[in-house]
Amino acid sequence: MNFIVAVDEAWNIGCNGQLLTHVPEDMANFRRTTTGGVVVMGRKTLESFPEGKPLKNRKNIVLTRNKNYQPEDVIICHSVEQLMEELKQYPEENIWVIGGSEIYNLLIPYCKKGYITILKGEYKADTKIMNMDQIPSWKKIEESPWQTSKKGAVFKFTVYENNEK
Image (cartoon, rainbow, N blue to C red; front, side, top):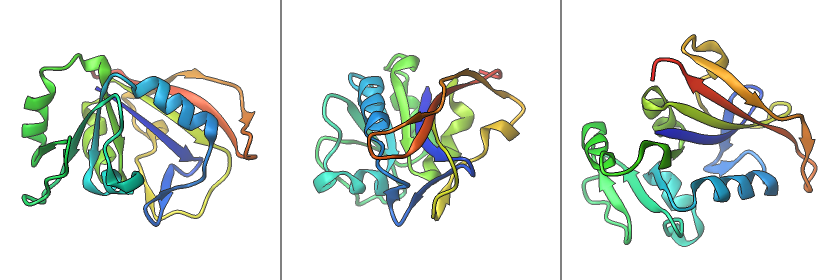
């Protein structure tokens, strides 16, 4: 299992249920990376998508405590144990944790790699994930140069690996 996320330099990921900023290159990377795979998210992340619909060309799994939540075309799991059982049928390298912060912080310890777009600076935010540079088992194994997006955000792509997985 892997995770994919965009963070600022303070490891913030969002504000008011939205991404920190729109980076077309990051969105293209997200689509390219996760298409054809399994995406694991929380209820609020699914609801933040256009019309609350699941992502196309992916198996969408939502981890939620809400027993009454039943969106169309989504697999629902109500516990990490149930989720892990469901995920056994898919290749590990094709499973992507995509948010939000509660789901990231819960599932990152189960992940082998993290594909992290780092945004230069610190944005206004109300949600964050754990700082991978402060977790001894996680090491940065790839890093692109800083780039400027079409929309003006400065960012770089990185890959972290969990040495305990």
